[in-house]
Image (cartoon, rainbow, N blue to C red):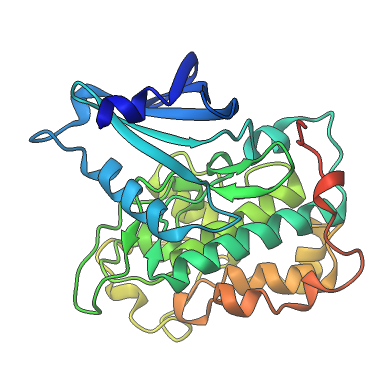
Length: 310
């Protein structure tokens, strides 16, 4: 049965490699549909199973949403586990770095709307992504943005269950994770999406820390240093620094200067997504009702978005 699944696909050429997997492009033999094969590296198996890959497969089978990458099939070749995924040739990081592409206000809005819809669906299914960043937001040939790479995802635990804070790429890591919180909520994903929003507006990472201490300082510099009154329990978190630099919270005027092309509604949503206290952070469901998404200009239509390859 496994051989029969594997025979349905060709593996044509290698297109990428990470710490844990190699990605190939190929085709579905019957339909000639272009696909990607994510092959987990042999050394990452423990007792014959790579748990992050198993978790990713489980979540992708469950999610099924227009703004989440589609898992088509799974097979093994010897000890190597392979996932057959829809082919998504571009990622948001590549578009951000391509200085030849001009981002219109409607383009940023369309990408943010699709990312928020996909993330809302994950959260509705009680799934935390825990690694949102521009190169995990992929673009389909027709322009749809899709959330990918669920290797660090986790089912939302019971309130008393501890989780690791060492998740999410540092530049997009929520402050509660930087401070070592073992109990956290979907707000960690919303923070990451807020930082991606800033990066789309600036075309540069907003808080690019060199290490965890520098990341905390850059976060405070960008958003202000929170107090215990604003965030009850803050200073009791395990990794809260003994000494911190005190920075003021940016005024609306300061934010308008930093994000000169943003509308007032856009800045309001950005602020709501990046509240330092996770209890005050907007949810995806609330974000989707923001005036930003309905004001002029409207989100760009898929057929007119940059990055399409059809």
